[in-house]
Image (tube, rainbow over all chains, first blue to last red; front, side, top):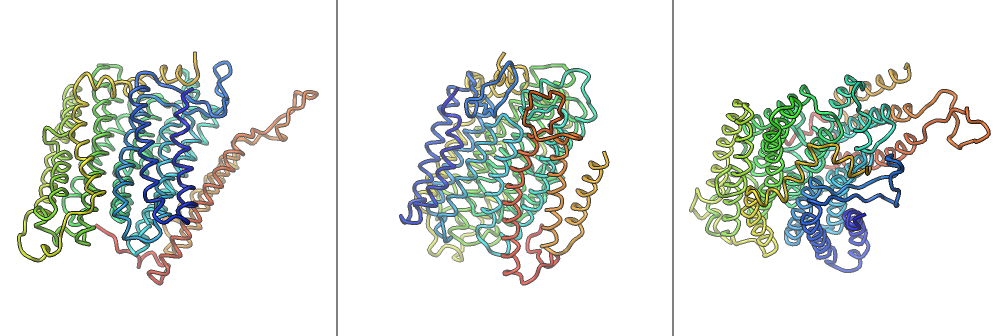
Length: 512
Length: 112
């Protein structure tokens, strides 16, 4: 029993209500209160990462411990992979909330904004901690319903249209997921992930589970915006307020989509080769098509949103390669390397894509436009934004010594060692096109032009925005340390261990 | 088995509506139809022919009980569905105020 686990959901959930109640009487209360509670969560998640990585723990809600190996209550599991996700969610969440202190002054009714922000954090923390399928669905809905509202927060034409698209596709995804859960419950009469895995003894109904896997994959694929399901993402991510774009792109598509795909396909379903090949193909497709869609964009936030699809493709691709190798039962250590590379890229993407969206927000805050053609020459007047966005751009395009280089090189090495030469070639190609696209962003936004059109009255954004951007850029540099063996063993290895060894997960949840 | 097939047909009816209708409110209605068909599937899973409410009766061990778990889950899912529908309707009302139409073909600011 780890008493910290329920607090990850309880604190932001109660924070949302306190924001709404006290924020009504005390002016500016929620603006400062929300970053404080999310900072508390972030420090708790870092503490958990230091302790729970090697020593995972389970919390049984209401004290309902499993009886004779059968779980009777709801359980929340904190293992290496969940802790990794908790760190991303809460650290990016804190920086976005802190950034919002200045940014959100453009909007009215900031109490609603912060309450929804807390709810979204609570939902995502719940999703990554839950060890029960239906609970995952409930927390998922909490986080995405708040995300629908936050996307529409500007209540102008574009925001509402984007939110409507997101809602229709998101609801469709929810029905697929719910139908998948219903079919799993039909066969197994249980909802606990570890317990469901127990029922998949040899000789179980394989074709039935293939159908369920496809249902679940398309459901979470829509939430994660893998390529054939990506239509909502560029609209939603570019229309939301910038700190929320950073949250959506940096965290929500991972917690609500990629995390669950990885978790369910490793710890719940038995890995088989056809589904693994399908997942790898989807990853490769979104990696390539995403970057080609991005390169023609002139709206900064749309450009970044398409790059999110492409970078998520890297994660799905390398995890899929690991699944193929595991299903063939060969070269286990290369499979581990591929999965570790994917998870590492997941963490890195949260840092640099969060930072890029915050940069885009800073530019929009100063100039009031998102069109690259109308910018130029900001490099001198906004030094902090310029420097941090340079770090993030180099990081996403995989230039050493920034973090993106190390995770991409691990993925490419794993692909070469597993003899998927074509996939390795695609990964390198996409990385080069990404570099081209970000050089365009740098040039048009910050250098290009020296004339007077934008110079007048342009100055650096206020302190909270600069602070968040600087911390994020430091994270971009610090995270490259994760590639070194000692630190990798402490943080990434527990996550890959728990994924590749379902028996370990089962022992943890149900007990022996 | 017929019930499951009818349930699937209901799902397809909803999907057809979402794809072909041009009116925002009709899309929302079609989504609700899909949602209800999913709930129906979930509730059917717990159904047992001739079953009674699961209050254990020690004097008659041969009694057939329905599974109460899917019912509890469907109740939760209905509450979530209510929130989603309310959010969707609120968005539709705001869209109507901005664009002055419910026609999805005229609401296309975002593309590319």
